[in-house]
Length: 160
Image 1 (cartoon, rainbow, N blue to C red):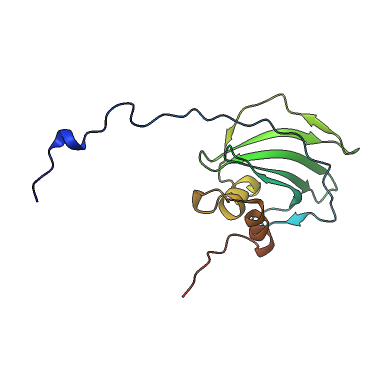
Image 2: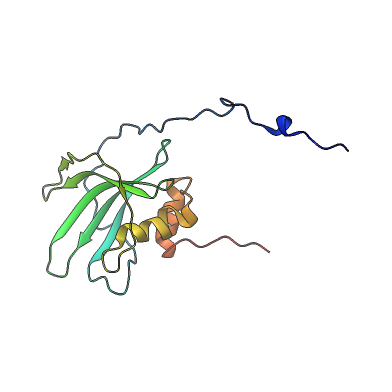
């Protein structure tokens, strides 16, 4: 077999289209059903209770996992947010904040924010690493995210 010349291996500019990412429009979910909320582990240092409303989880065609996050503090405060997570870029976005009457206030900030590893308040890092983007790869369907929440984190499926 002969050697392949360098020009034969060259990739022509334009062979690969650069697609600009486009976020899909989403509606706001129903208020969370706290009796169905799935707790998830954040860290030993975290004093808050963190849970996801399973009905709100969606895996979008735009590569965004969307969910309602409920955070209860030891003092009795509750924060409810509807958020999105992009596994490809390790970013998150706040869509809306829940109100006590079950309504939503849409966030004015449409910016995506990098998910960082913190110590106590690392709920987004935990969701990214263990539940929605294990190994940096987005779950492919809602059921996969639910399974990860049920199991307490991603469990690789090893078959012998």
